[in-house]
Amino acid sequence: MPTKQTAQNIFLWVSAAVILFGVVYGLAGGGRFHFGALKTFTYQSNVLLGLGFLVMPLVKGRGLRQYIFVAVMLAAVVTGLVYNFLLVPFAGAPLFFFDYVNFSTHVLVTVLPLVNYFAFEQRGQLGLRHVLVGSLFPVVYWMVFVAIGERIDFFPYFFMNPNIVGWGMVFVWFAGLLAVFVGLGLLLLLYDKRK
Image (cartoon, rainbow, N blue to C red; front, side, top):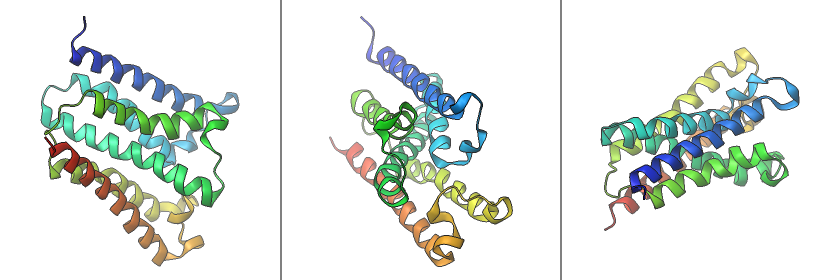
């Protein structure tokens, strides 16, 4: 009979394989690789989650492991929320059930970290520092693409493009999405502290 830790490790590695397969399958659409998709937060958060799930069973110190866990969980959950509740209704993105790639990169990526947390993670291990560090990835992502978007003539999302929404709204969207990240992290922290 496998221990709970062994069962979690198997779950994490199988989940990582499923997520990374979705990434590769999505990048290889049409028979050749489209690496431009790696510029999107969706693909970056999927890669982060897949690699995070591969590494988590190997990390011995709970501190580092918790930083990885919170970073991948926040990125994955926000990916699903933004896609399904912002991009589908307001930007014409296709619903997830039309193909495997959308299902994998926008639904599974959100559900699997939640299943891992509720089924396997030990409670009471998270601190505010984990939430703050876990929120750095979207901040860095946003700053990089807003800074270079004009130069490379590419903004991953309409709400990051000042030519569409204006600079003021770019920062409003940034503040709103950062609040969602930190807010979700704080909710996770509050739940984690419950006995």
